[in-house]
Length: 209
Image 1 (cartoon, rainbow, N blue to C red):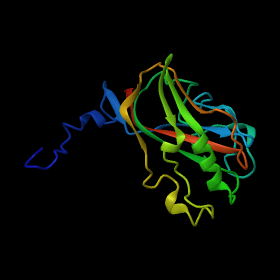
Image 2: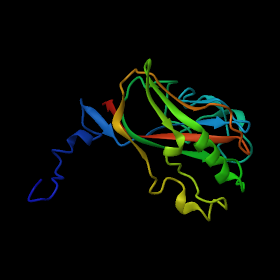
Image 3: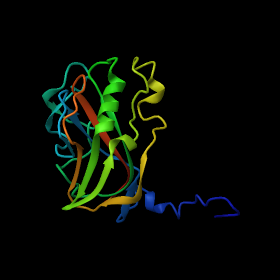
């Protein structure tokens, strides 16, 4: 602090300089992934299992048409480059939220989100340890608040001022550690139409330059 003003000079912020050679770079970069939730429901939806560049059962990139097999995952869907772990990065994750993407707007959209949120939980594993169980109803969903149209509800969507569930202590994923996140249910909960679910884990990514 300088006279009660936060010191924003280059020295204390050098650690965030992405052009700093022979050092560790720090980014405010979420870790995220997308998987499909079937209309008939399922006991478990696995995330971070299929990396970017591989085919998965998802809604096509154009957002038109029903979910289909073989849709190539891009940065729209995930920033996980290797299935299950990040070999060259370290993550400090401080919170999470989630979102649903559908091929069409339906009057039952809000009901479907409530069904999923009220009947499922998130299960986190890092390495060979269970580290977190979290009921979905407590985790903010970054989606519309009413079942009308995309445009009419845009103020509530697309991550603008999105709320997070904040972890009590950060979840640390070291280089080479395996990450598994599963959306689980005691019994399959049916919804109107198969939908893509994206989980966003917010925090800091570290990597060597």
